[in-house]
Image 1 (cartoon, each protein chain N blue to C red):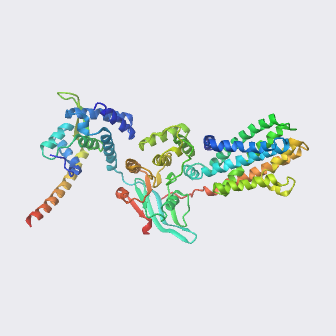
Image 2 (image 1 turned 180 degrees about the vertical axis):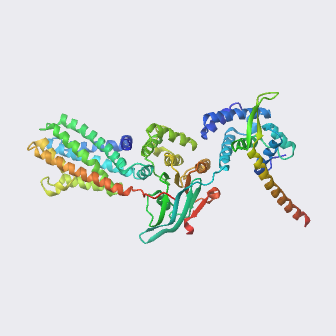
Image 3 (image 1 turned 60 degrees about the horizontal axis):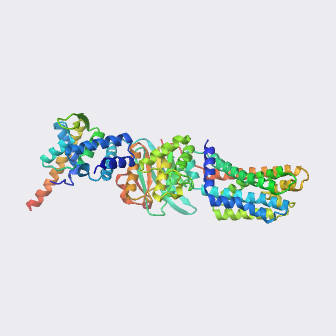
Amino acid sequence: MSDWPELFETELLRLGLQPVRARQLTAETAQQSAEHGAPPADVFGPAHLYARHLVAELNSSASARRLAPGPVLLSLTGVGKRYRRRTVFAGVDLRVRGGEVAAIVGANGCGKSTLLKICAGLIRPSTGEVRRTRRVGFVPQDGGTAGWLTAEEHFTLFGAAAGMVPGRARSTGVHLAARLAWRPNTGQPAQHLSGGTRQKLNLVLGELHAPDLLLLDEPYQGFDQGTYLDFWQQVFAWRDAGRAVVVVTHLLHDLRNVDHVLDLGAL
Amino acid sequence: MTAFVVASLCAREVSRRWAALVLVVALPLWFYLVRRDLAGQSTRMLALGIGWSVSTLTLFVVNASRSVDPRLRLTGASTASIIGGRLAAMSGVGLAVALGYWLLVGVDQDLRHWWVAGLMMAVTALAAAPLGSLIGALLPRELEGALALLSVCAVQMLADPAGSVAKLMPFWSTREIGTYAVDGGGFDMVWRGLGHAALVWLICTGGTLAIFRWRLRVANYPEPT
Amino acid sequence: MTPRPWLHGFLDLCLLAMLRERPDYGYGLAQRLAAAGVADVPGGTLYPALLRLEQQGLAVPDWQPSESGPRRKYYAITDAGREFVDGQTAEWRQFRDGVDALIEARAAR
C-alpha cells in the first residue's frame, strides 16, 4: 500500500507530465486521501489506473476550451487523380483550418494514401487545385524510417533536414516521444523496434519541425488499445494547439470528434 | 550542414551492416588472390573488384533510403544535400577500402609505380560510388540494379582494353592507370585515365542528381488565401 | 447510495452549484453531495473533476489551514463558473422535465 504514491507518480511521468506537475499532483492526492481518512488505494483505486484517468480528464478539459478555427491551412478544389485511363478519384473538395481535424475514409484501394500524398506534394493531382501552408508534416502508413539508425539518430537526421542543430533536434524528439508514452532506447536500431513503437517514431519525425499541418496515414497500425487512445488524444492536443490534422483511417469509430469526414468511396 | 549530417549518419548506418560490409570488403580480395602470382593481372582485378563492391554497396544504400528521402525533402532538406551527403559518405567508404588494398599491394607485390596503383584504386572507388547511385536511381529494385552492375563489371573485365567497347565502360580508367602502375610506359596514360574517370564521375553524379531532383520534387503549392 | 451513471454529465453542475453557495474543499463537497442524496461520489471521480474545473477557470483553489490536520485546498467559484452554472441549469431543467414527461406518460396509460 505504501508504494501507491510512487507508482502513481511514475505513471504520471510515463504519460508525459512534467516532473514538477507530477510531484504536485502526487502530493495533493496524498492530502485528499488523508481528508477521507483512508489509504489512497481505497479512495482512488489502483495507482496506474487513477493516473491514466486523471491525465485523460485533464486533457479533455483542454479540448473543452476549444478555440475558434484558425486560418485555412489546406484547401483542395476539384482534385482528381488518373493513372493512364483509370480514374482513382475525381472532384475532391476539402478545406481544413487550423484547430480542425479532417478524416479521409473509404475502402481499401479507393486512393486514400494517394490523396494524402497529393496533399503533401509528393504526387501531382491530374485535375483541380491544391493550396496548402508551407510547413507540413507527413507520416506514411509504414516505412519512412532507416532500419539501421536509432531513434535519436533519426531525430538528428530529420532535425538537420529542418535546419535544427543535433542537440536541439534530439531533445525535441525525446520530449515529443514522452507525450506518446515512449522513452527511446539508445542504441536500438529502428528495425528492432516493435511495429507500434516504430509508428511512434514515425509520428515524432512527422512533427519534429513543428509543422502547422499534419498529414497522417493510419499511423496507429500495430498500436495496442491503450496506445491507440493515446494517439487520438495526441491528435486532439495538436488540434487544440491550433494545428490542422488530416488523418487517413478505415475505422469508423474514430470519427466522433473530427470536424470533417471525406468519404472517398462515396464520391 | 544537412549534407554533413546525412553523410555521417549514412557512414554509421553502413558500419552497422556487418555482414554486408565484410562481404563487400572481401570481394576484391578473392579477385586478387586468384592470380596473386601475376602482379599486373591481380592488381587490375583487385581494382575492378573495388569498383564492383563499392558501386554495389552504394546501390543498396541508395535503395534502402528510398522511403526516407521524400520525408526529408518535405521536412526541408534539399535534394543536393540528401544525395550529395550520401555520395560523400560512400566515396569515403570506398576510399577507405582502396587505402587498405593499396597497403596490401604495396607489401605483397613488386610494382613499378606503387603510388600510381594507389591512385588507380582511389579513382576507381570515387567513380564507383556515383555509378552505383546512378544505377540505383535508374533501376529501383535491388536485384535488377545488382545484375546490371554485374553485367557492367563483367564486360569491363572481359573486353579488350584497346577496343572501343572497353573505352565506353565506366572503369576503363582503372585499366589505363593500372597499366602504367604495373608495366610503366608513357605518363600520358595516367592523364587519359584521369580524364576518363572525371568524365564518368561527372556523368554519373550529374545523372544521379538529375533523376533524384525529378523523383524527389515536392509540389510548390500556393498558400491558401 | 451508489454513483449513478447519469451523474457524470451533471457532476460539474452540482459541484459548481455547491461552490456558488460557499467555497469548500474536496471531502466537504463529497459529504454535501451525499447528504443531498445525489450520489456517493468516490474520490477517484471527485478530485479529477475538481482539477478539471480549476483548469477550465470555472473554480479557483486556495490553500487554507484546517483546525485539525494539514492544509486544505478550498475551491471558490469564478465568474466564468457562475455563467456555466446558469447555462447548465437551463439544460438540466429541460432534461429533467423531458424525463418527467416520459415517466408521467407511461404512468397515465
